[in-house]
Image (cartoon, rainbow, N blue to C red; front, side, top):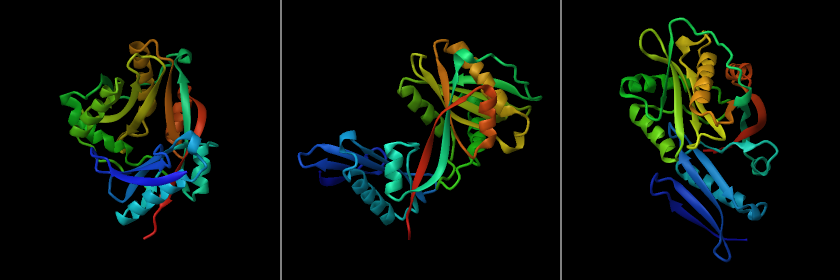
Length: 283
């Protein structure tokens, strides 16, 4: 039973945090709200101890978060993906959150990868790097991140992130500090600019499954098969660098038909679906 909810501030980000405590002072659950790019929406994360679920802890934390977001003038709170059919989905539906996006998760078993030939689009070359991007490619890589700006997000209150070299380095450092390896594969056009890229993160010991991050091709370079070529080249690179790795994981919005076709053609198979729910805050 909830005794009280303590409101705190994350000293590293300035974002609000709530901790629900029981009568004996035990933490029952937490809630965080992170500001998103553009300032109009926030990202909501609620975690409740398994033994305390279905007892009102999540609902109480949700009320606190929504109240704070309303006071801050936010228009929406976007939740984390919840697995279809899970307790998380049941909570979101019962709490009246709106479903805004569906994601299909897929996996490529590297033992089944046949090294298939994917034609190289004329006028482009492939480069690979791990960790931080090199100085000579940093500026063009930051510009190429706009390739993700128009990825399908359906009704989610999401706005594109702003990228610069400092942020690229910061993200690479976060991955490295976790003991993982960030591998980036990019296509460079005849003008020396990066036209598209794909990323994967691999555990420090090179085992288990790697996780794909972003894949994007700038609009003016689409229609040449760059995304499929990039991903195939990265799969080959991953197998060469991490021979003990078992597979590669990807998650793609159901409405992102172009990327789903690319993954399907390379042998990625669906594992499960997750759903994204959102709180719409009325003025």
